[in-house]
Image (cartoon, rainbow, N blue to C red):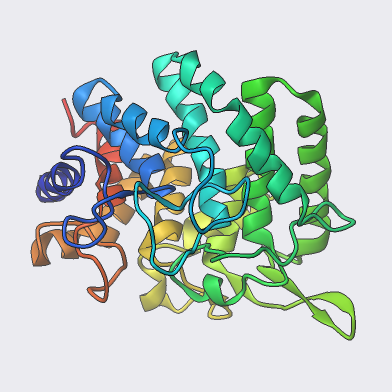
Amino acid sequence: NEIYNTALRTFAHNAVDLYTDCPSRERAGWLCDSFFTARVERLMSGKNTVERCFLSNFLMEEKYKGIPDGMLPMCYPSEFRNPEYIPNWAMWYLLELKEYYERTGDRSLIDDAKSKIHSLVRYFEEYENSDGLLERLDGWVFVEWSMCNKLVQDVNYPSNMLYYRFLMAVFELYGYEKYKKKAQRLRAAIRKKSKTGLFFCDNSVYVGGKLTLSDEFTETCQYYAFFTGVATPEEDRELWEVMVRDFGPERSKTGKWKAVHPSNAFIGNYLRLELLAGAGLYGRLEADIRGYFDYMARQTGTLWEHTNVNASCNHGFASHVLVWLDMLGYII
């Protein structure tokens, strides 16, 4: 009940008129965060009115100030004094758009976004190497607030995993078979290049003119692999079992897999919970929800951007806990 009330309070503070990052900092909505917040709106209101406004805003301008042609803003409506963009967040726009269509059946927004999505695809194609992998992406390449974000060049595999799911969404929404085939080739390349032994490696870097695996592994990279469908419990049974059994909020106490850098709240821990929920592992899901959020609820009565108080302590995406509590039967 305490976590439920905390999540509900966090949502209410961040969906007054538009999805927001947090009440006291960015008074505008960020992509990726919105993917999760939109699910909460549907659960708590039965509608997606705010989400439609949010997604529509990104379609209103022909060109956005300070960012390259084809790219979408990371946070909108807003203008950063030092122009910046997150290429990964533009991919999340399409993933949310797909879920919006599945939630509402509103095809008009999908059709309105078609030209923007085509421009976005063309933008990313400029960064594909001979294997079809995105290489040396410009902008603020963002995976999550952890060691992950020190491993984003030259070829970042979580970003490419997301690109795989992005291309599949282009095919699923617009029916272009070529993007499905392209996505399948990309998936095969990621698995061949990135998976070494049990884990997926986070990145490859140029050493002596040759792309070489960094031998850096993060918990979040493994979650991206399963979330995007690059990995599956059937193909990667041992990794799946390690992820479920040994990762999560208790790993800092158990000390298992010390060579694998731990996740932060956004986005790794949320991807983990999403995977547990999707697999029907409700006992583990409930235990991890307690482990991740009980101390936040008790300390501030809101849910945080990080696992500590170093940043926002009232973050809109974090209210997604309500969706999992509903799956567990705590919301009637």
